[in-house]
Length: 226
Ligand SMILES: *Cc1c(COP(=O)(O)O)cnc(C)c1O
Image (tube, rainbow, N blue to C red; front, side, top):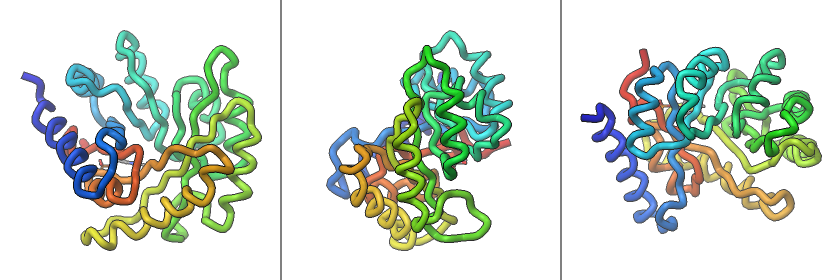
């Protein structure tokens, strides 16, 4: 018996119900399984249920896991803060980076993306709530950063990402996601954007309601982190 069969089914159903409730096209929200602090065996079990997209926050932990799972056709997304001294490995080992928040890191990722791989898919992380402690570009800096990223040949600019502070109430959860969706809508033609990475275990429904194309879910799938 697969230990994650029930939780995987429940999360898939939650997404499908939210898509139906808010008039989203069925299947338009992709599930990114956040496997930070989880074992390779747990990732393997989710793969057996059909999950292919996995998100990791910490490079060293991710590299160990990738090595143990090399036999599986998984797509790896980097969703942690990108440190300059780790950018080369991030550029070489991941298919997506959701957390580009400054031009310097974008330039490094582009320069370091190996030529034998397709361009690295990137989202720009936006600090939508304006908290000093959170990472992400402020909305006022967004256009400068987006045009810098769009000019880099080894990056493929896909969209925007955010991680707002936790809120209990659905309406309050929806507000930052609505703002991110509006920022995307105003720019999607200019830059060819198609991705809104937003929503976690606690605010998945709000994110789907506001148009998420990736929800990043950890605990609802794997249980509490160690
Ligand atoms: C950990 C993490 C998630 C998943 O959070 P859960 O509460 O486990 O669903 C999503 N996005 C980012 C950026 C994270 O760091």
